[in-house]
Image (tube, rainbow, N blue to C red; front, side, top):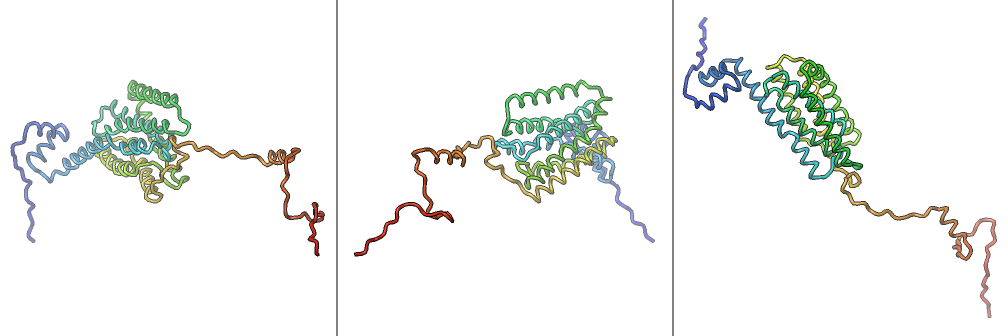
Length: 304
């Protein structure tokens, strides 16, 4: 029986610009750069998997830096945050903030947690916009919430790694809790309001990719569990968008809606009192009351 020999890897070496070489080495390391870029060894499965994880991680970070921008622009354009849940936004901001602080303190590669830093800022803006466009909003509540978010960020930055590890465990219920109020609100309203479908679908693919990069580069069951729970709930939100569609806020829900004057109505009791005053003519009904003799003169035509 004849044996088939597979061709050897193309160990070709060609000149690469030093700047490009340095940038690639900074991302995937010297070993994988030598194998994949210089030698074109496409059979190096380990380096291919690692490079794919790094590329997805950087893509997630770049995408995360603008992911909530469509949501922010939608709120500003409509001057309404109808359909958006304030508890969901607050819990989501807390979860992103803790994950970003934990990754920074643990000295993880920035490609494994960087998007959480950008999402913290964007979610904080969404939270403040929800408060600003609420029907009974006040500048005090907006400023108080902004100060509380800044204080929480400063606290996490000054917290030791051991405490952050414990807080990171809480991101799983935070992640679940941040999505449940929004899911319930969509179900009760029968539409998703101002919730951006683009943002939700980006979150679905983003959490899926982040789950892959976490499994490839980190060995943290807590972070894996957090991203797994977020993936499932993001899928639920995406399904709701497909089923319900996006609803527009009614005029009464908008903060800038004009207040229309309501016609004044006079209660029945007041009308009865007014009609019983002396000198006020009482309208006569043309329909006689049973058992009552009709009053008034009868005019009989005289026959000649």
